[in-house]
Image 1 (cartoon, rainbow, N blue to C red):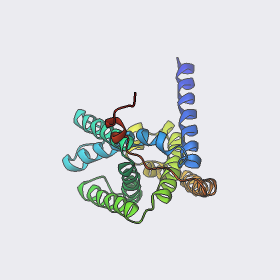
Image 2 (image 1 turned 180 degrees about the vertical axis):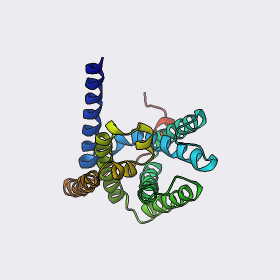
Image 3 (image 1 turned 60 degrees about the vertical axis):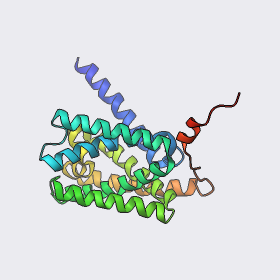
Image 4 (image 1 turned 90 degrees about the vertical axis):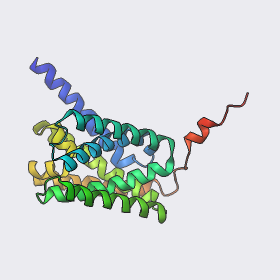
Length: 220
């Protein structure tokens, strides 16, 4: 039984690391494929943190937080799949939100209404700035590199930390586990940005509106 558990954990860890590598070093190329997955998990964490901040509950500790997180995640995944503008706003907003939550957790702040509100405001501002100044490519590259690095480091530390805690703040988990993991996180994120910039100098994602395509009747 122990051997089977170790094998399952090793397989899950390998998948997590491979996913993180793809995200960090090829996230822009595979952005359209990976985005609904990212949208769901970010929505799950965001919805659960909203319940935590508004009602003082522990992260993913109640049925309500799971239901709200799942619904928000599903909405984010569907909207980002259908509309490019929402997809870009989501990735930009997620980057701003995650940075504030991560920094707050890193200096010892608990997820409360004030931290959640500041992080939400930062996410909204980041989303607006991304669209207003046409920073989609840079934001996607930076966000996927950072998230990929987080997935790699998170997979490593997940063996010693509860999954819920990692989903709430991978930066905090990394800091609590080892400063070395923070260094690994920063190195992978920076190398990911450099690699993606070099690989995508002549490549730009096309915008889309799959809702309009769905509404348009197919030609016979």
